[in-house]
Figure 1 (tube, rainbow, N blue to C red):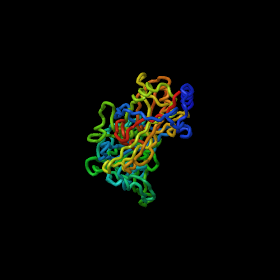
Figure 2: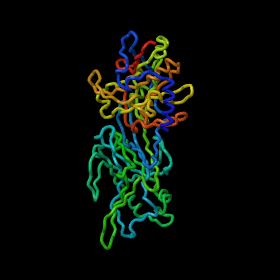
Figure 3: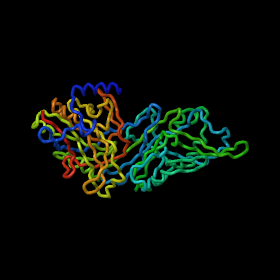
Figure 4: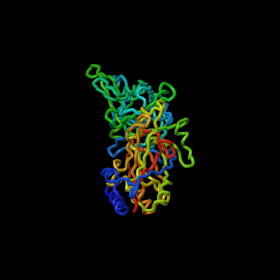
Length: 479
């Protein structure tokens, strides 16, 4: 795949050759603007905000070794810029094989406890606001071979357990019976549920006789944040690694061994010899948010651009000023074409320190003639693979004129602009977003991983912002 992509890009590069831009080898390669032969100017942009539709939602599946990505769970109750968010997790945890047996002394088995454990990897948002996670039993059967998008809606019933906690407490160690545990969410489930598991049989047709029999007996877990009761003030999404060895269902019990009461446990993990299904639902509600007030299509574009990591929002950029530039200047050599954008400083109640910006953003364009979403092959894939250091899109921490910490972004599309000016290619609308993944169909047929799921949001100056407009800087020379 990389070889094919490299060949395609090389063909385009040699047929549309332009000068090296600043991020290739250094700013010293760009001629100084002397306003005689070389000039430095900026062009205005038009920006409009949109929400991603269902067809663009992230698909979450398994890798070749059966592992799944980090999932997001929790409730964001108060983000003035982007509204509320809620992350549910659905998954199976099953016995490691069949037929499955506990000790062959069934009458002496006695449940101590059953605990659901998930490896915590991080928190995006307020680590001190209390979250309440409810654990339910799934009604719908997950398909282990399906990749569910982030709108997966599965039915569930019967509360099995819950836990209220501050996310900051997950960044800790626990010392339990024969175990040392780090960074783990532990939810004790009901004794009734534990007894169901301990009492099940492995004889023909019974739950532990086969995978299909167990899945009919218990379809899996639904972990759902409480957004109305004890967790209504939660204000974060937490990431959990379902495939990690520290994620499991632990059944603690006692039994009589050689006339002596012994305590032991069994562990069921998500990855095992019988693959289980999994899904991560991310719900966004923009009601009353700043973004909701900027989802119209004002004449000439908007003053603000709202980017929320997928599943979220994106901005379309149009460059009519580039067509005017071309009409006035004619054919020129483009040394640099850089799209510049800045985060807008916000008051403390907009919670920018809690809800951090996307560390990586992305751009491509819509070929409105063919109807194909198209990568910037000549600018973003100069080496045959995606190169953010050349293309840009990485957040840069800086300070606003008022002293507030902000982030800025730059994208370099020098070769693309040169083709518009020299070869009269179309000036297509550009899409700015922070995707979990980007998937290109024919004729490109490749995909990219860009950002962590559902973590990151930023309010940028749009094309019509009065003090920090999104714009394109062009350094050019006359021919």
